[in-house]
Image (tube, rainbow, N blue to C red; front, side, top):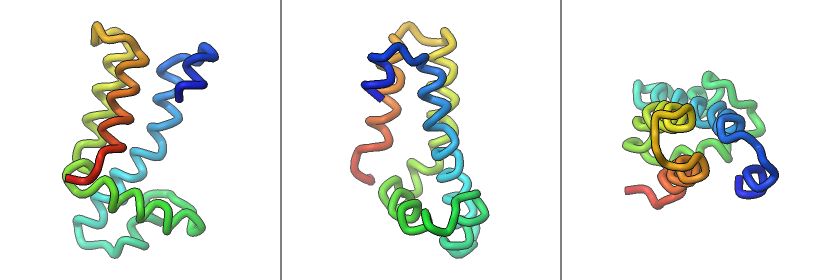
Length: 105
């Protein structure tokens, strides 16, 4: 992310690159919470079979609480990057990454 922003990449484009994966994780998490087996939920969310193990690890890392907040965080970042925040775009994106990277609580 740092390299992309240093090269002048627009913050909304960087967020767009994150968004597909994060929306898929949120969907897989929701399906799993509704009782669908995790492997089936990952497939239904649009991830290819060869990514299943990686996606399952990401789901476990995030945990239920953060998975349930992903859509809100994406909307908040999107709104902030479009002028809804006084924070610089880089800070908005960094906050999103920190929310995703911290240990499961």
